[in-house]
Length: 128
Image (cartoon, rainbow, N blue to C red):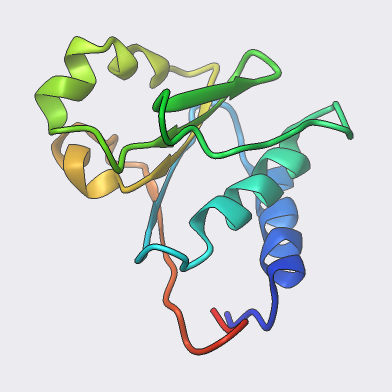
């Protein structure tokens, strides 16, 4: 799929989010600025019952939780899988939660086999 702007990326995320079931892990890979956070904003909007959520990237606190079951991870600053476990984040992977993970490569060995992998690539200004 190709996106021509952030609005299209977020709209696709909304559709994807509306189709996700509890227990799902979505792993998003891509360079800085590829649109991972924008897509996750759409996913969370598609899942949430709160239409006015302020969805932000959890770059400095690693995870933001919405509606008590949607977890948005930004693992750019995490060291490795052991660091992830030590911080108690593995506990978020359960049958009642939906986890969206930016920079999942650092914890690849911990991801469930059923993980939905999404790769975003920058294809020029406003193209993903």
